[in-house]
Amino acid sequence: MSNADWLIPQWPAPAGVRAVFTTRQGGVSLPPYDTLNLGDHVGDAVAAVAANRLILQRAIACQPVFLQQVHGTGVLELSHDSVNGLAADACVTRQYGVACTIMVADCLPVLFAHLDQPVVAAAHAGWRGLAGPGVAAHGGLSSGATQNSFEGVLEATFKRFSALVGAAPDEVAPRTIAWLGPCIGPTAFVVGAEVKAAFEVVHPAAGALFVEQPQQAQPTKYLADLPGLARLRLNALGITRIYGNDGTDDWCTMSRPSQFFSHRRDAVGGSSTGRMAACIWQD
Image (cartoon, rainbow, N blue to C red; front, side):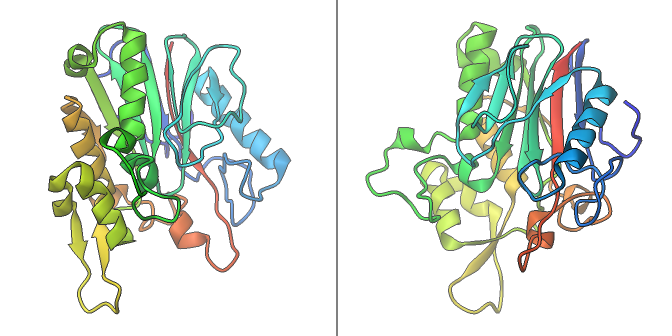
């Protein structure tokens, strides 16, 4: 891979498994999408996005498959015939030369690999997808939601991942590794009380990952630890080999404008911003 600014996960991936997280550097897009915007839904020039995606494809020497991400829990199994633009927020594959690809600009990308079987996956974990469909579209809790309705995108991804491995999830988890990419950090991610409640419904311990902001006007606001919440959900699945984003500022998309796109930082007042990509594939 040719761009030294991109992030290469430091994790004990098996031989043949490759992964990368692009930054905003290395493309052709003009401001405010400068320069490697990979999102075709943010107002950037179509030709620039196509050129940027080709730069990525050539750098990783395989085909990245881009999803239409909807902050849900849908998971697609990818093959060499998969096309861009299908609605889902996660993808899995056993196919060599196909890159599971997630676009982000504050949300958390999560990559999965199995240590013994040729199975990889990628998930888009914004807070809504992470919490699950028991959270209403407006951000509150859905009436009549059951425990099963709180299965989030990580649980849904791991279920499909385990099915491809061909074993029960509790057998797959100890041989699964996960990598958390950059996202909005716990000193920048401001949310309402309804978001805290949505996570506490499933895991009461999640409350410790929300810090009340002092001297704020009502209603009360909190700083949320998105990578910490993802680690909590992964641990509950039995996945304990977790690498990457530890919640420090180096991983925060909002606080590093020269390196990362950030929707919350840049897409204000009618403005827009680009999208980065996390990819995982097998040679």
